[in-house]
Amino acid sequence: MTRTSYAGQTDLKIQTDRSPGDREESILDTRIMERAKPCLKQLKQGGKILGKTAKMLLETTVQDVMTKAAGAGAEQNQENVAGKKNYALITGASSGIGLEFARRLSLEGYPLILIARRRDRLEMLRRELGTECLLLPADLSRHEDLVRLCEDLVGRKIDIFINNAGFGVAGPFMGTDLLREVNMIDVNVTAQHVLFKYILHRMDAEGGGSILNVASSAGLFPAGPFMAGYYATKAYMTSLTRGVVEELRQAGSPVYVGCLCPGPVNTEFNDVASVSFALPGISAEECVDYALKMMAKKQVVIIPGRELQAAVFGQRFLPTALTVRITAAQQRKKLAVDDSAKGRRAGAVDSFTESART
Image (cartoon, rainbow, N blue to C red):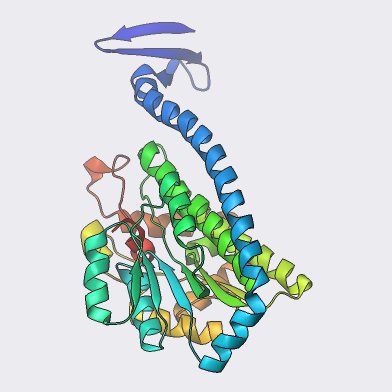
């Protein structure tokens, strides 16, 4: 092994004999390691925060569930007599699918609890709807915001929870930004998981309710090169939902849980991120309309659009390696970048869950 110094750069190199003549491959670039140091420091700090977060959330959940459970029967009877609907809680409510769910559930008479990062967009939505809306701005990649949100929900009975917040990072894994990917995992996995568990505990104690975890068709495919981390987060929520549904079935729980797995949805993301999709997109209105119909039928995995349904069904009959290669080809098209920028470009938010960051 030799060390070769360049201007401002030091590489560790190894001699290989995989082909005639000596070839050198760089196995470590200290510039990249220097860039990674702040990331690693942040991850270390994040681990400590997450430990405290888990304890606080557990304490809040247990106290809240026990309090609500004590009066659940009387409260339920009073509400049934009055015909009053309780809150519909929507994360990522400021645009896209979350926005459309807010519109539809408002029309159905639900008071709303709306969560997104930017208050100004939530204020605009409240003025548009003209119905009861409780606004709880929060950045769900921040653990302290997640704790505060759970505390703010104490004492508010929720009939429907649309667990919609999430976003994606596009690009080759070695070229995407680590901090953005960690934030993506915080929102797509940690926040969705925590809120799912928290609301489920409450609904089960209160005698019922409906939860829809908004994942993605990406979660139904074996892997997604050039959006690998995003596909992995959506596979997590899809698998989690299916597993929990079976647990609830065996326990005889009155709570309905489903998982919405849309493909391309026509939102403002397409223009912002300069991406194209292999399958034609559907409107947010079509997506939400189909989701609500399937929720009424207690469907577990909800896939809007016949073409997408056919694609998901058909890939089961292909070898996994071939499916991954086909997916890679389609993801390359989405990147829509110059040859000179390939390998460096990181995309923005995924179209159908973009609202978490807006």
